[in-house]
Amino acid sequence: MPNTKTVHVPHLGGIEAAYQMPQPYDSSKPTLVLVNSFTTSSELYRSQYANKDLTNALNLISIELLGHGQTRTKSENFTYWDTAIMNLQVLDALKITGKIFVLGTSQGGWITVRMALLGPDKIAGIIPLGTSLDNENPRTISLGCWDGPGLLKDNISDWTTNDKTADFEPAEEYSDFLIDIGFGKEVDKETRQYWRDTIKANYQGDEGRRRIRMAAINLAERDGLHSRLSDVRCPVLWLHGTDDAVYSVANAEEEIKLFVNSPDARLQVVEGGKHFLSFSHPKDVDAALIKMAQQYGK
Image (cartoon, rainbow, N blue to C red):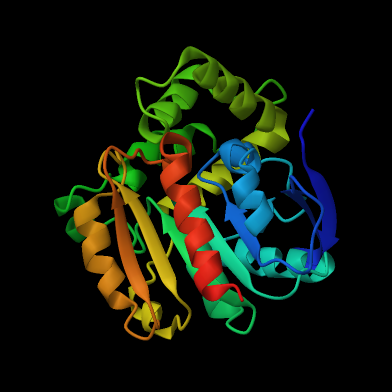
């Protein structure tokens, strides 16, 4: 059974937004919103939920994106901007106020920026992890980033049909591809099996096929954010692993410079860190989060 609860928000004609909070909300503490990576779920941050030092310093709430986990809406079409709006509405619906930070892994990084742009009075700081704030293009690929649209092209084609697909579930080959690039090919067997099972469970049947298809289209055909980054005026702490198989440190070094109006925009490189950095190096990530909360969460 999922560990999430749902809350209704009005965007897109109504969304049942799934979220996970390891501890009850405490209005005396700042809050950290956690945004998961492509076709994972709020369970990506289990290491963070278990860290008492982190939960003592911050309220944690992981909100599952549109097309992910247990979040549901009748609208078949949505974008990352819609998820950012949904997340801000979830915070309102749950009456979460005060200093709010947003951490996002990979595609979650794109949500952190969108939330800062759409809710500048609400978001106190953002923490992108293992991400790129451009769409995939010759510049990013030349810097060592992946070709997401090319790699997902066949999946999107396979997942696009007018036929009912009651027996649909993602192929194990797809799940292993995601696990390899995110957690690392050498990840332990228990973690690999957990995410194989979770990805299959989250995308069952015709409804599951439609959701994973739109999630993939969002990733492959997203808009870049470079021209908007100067509008981000909160602190930015970008964490990036040297062993990230999807996005490169070289790209992060270029893009952090685009936050020209942030009062504090820093890149912290983590030696040996994987794409899912909060999993591979939770101590480094959690320590950086606590430090940021102490610095900007008062």
